[in-house]
Amino acid sequence: MTEIVETDTAYLGGSRKNWSNEKRANTPPYLDHKTPIAAYVERNDEGQIIQVTANVVTDSTTETLQNDLRKNVEAGAVVYTDQSNVYQSLASEYWHRTVNHSIDEFVRGDVTTNRVEGYFGLLKRCIKGTYIHMAPCHMDRYIAEQSLRYNLRENNDGGRFQQVAAQAIGARLTYKELTGKASD
Image (tube, rainbow, N blue to C red; front, top):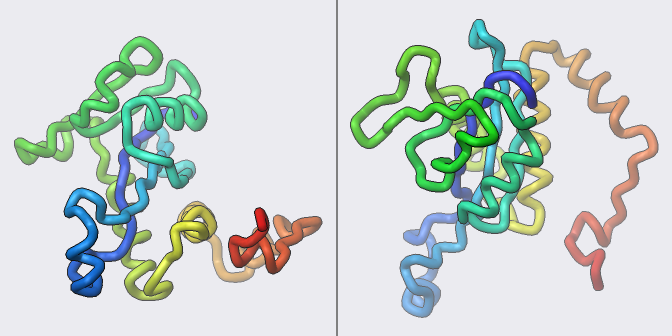
């Protein structure tokens, strides 16, 4: 991504209130088994979305999120984030601006993270309404599907089908890979 990029992190996973009493009693509150997701929405100067990229990250530490950002966004790009500490040292590599959600600031001029927040909202609604449950070992596949859907949202059904069918040529997914048992 090379233009204006909004980035944020979300956490996907089951709610603690849905766990069994035994599991809740044996798991500390800070370990809620949610999976961190990093997302990047690239847009142009007019605010039109060019593309979205999202992926599972191992954790939400500064090092992990900044390395993931470097992998997905070219140095010198404009990067908009919230006030999270993990993004504070980006100024040397990116043109970095922030919004401060803690004082109810969500837009300041062109600086906003609303588009990436909107993507996360769609992703979370898809989980609740369509998938119900996403196993962590398959989370990257669900996110890739949602990102593709989001990127092709302006196509009609025929256009989306052609795009997906073209990407399937030469691709093979074995049952072991699908079930997460490929390493056995």
